[in-house]
Image 1: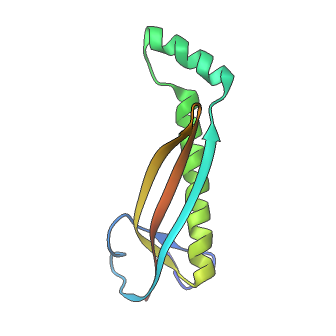
Image 2: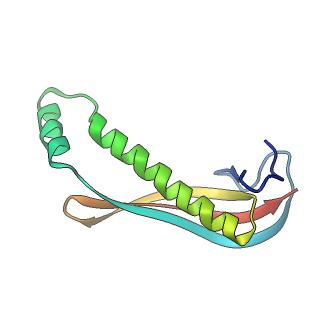
Image 3: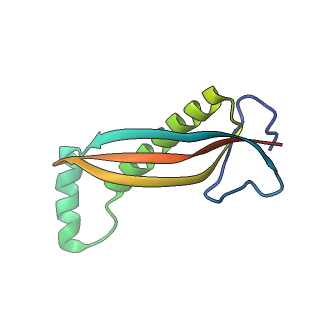
Length: 112
């Protein structure tokens, strides 16, 4: 991975990037998205509750939400001049019945 390219950013859920030295801190960066459930997914989820199994519609919804929130966090880090984000975490919260927020956050840094 070439961290000198402007469009490449390293993401880590640890305090550092292995083999790299943090040379500058930019601060906390965040990204979020709020998603609502789909009526069709709710019907299928209700049926799955009877027979059991993975709720694939909700799994896809969460995957899409994670990608979007992470992308927004990365955009913010790049706008600050960072080429890495460390200590990345995810959180969720209920906004209203049927809608939830997925929140990604971490610390924007420059590594050498």
